[in-house]
Amino acid sequence: NGVDGIDAAILIDVEAKYSYSENLDLVVGVNNLFDEYPEENPSAGSLGQLYSESSPFGFNGGMWYVQARYTY
Image 1 (cartoon, helix red, strand yellow):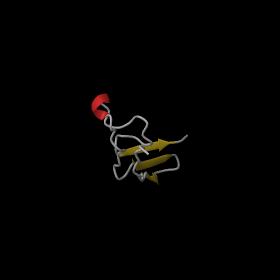
Image 2 (cartoon, rainbow, N blue to C red; image 1 turned 90 degrees about the vertical axis):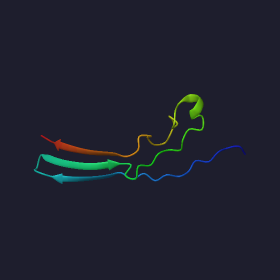
Image 3 (cartoon, rainbow, N blue to C red; image 1 turned 30 degrees about the vertical axis):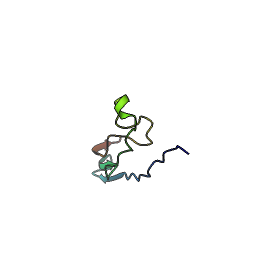
C-alpha cells in the first residue's frame, strides 16, 4: 500500500526524591533511560534533518538531571 511502518519504542523516565527537611527535597532523575531515538528521517539528505520534527518523542536521547526543591 506504499505506507511505511514505524517501529515501536518504549521510553522509561525515572525520578527519585529524598526529603532532606520539611521544606527541602533533593531529586535525581532521568528521562529516556535507555537513550532511545526516533527513526531517522528518510528525506534527511535533502532537508538536512536527521530526525523528523513530528516525532512522538524527542531526538536528543537520554537526559539526566539533579534538582533541589524548596517550598515555603
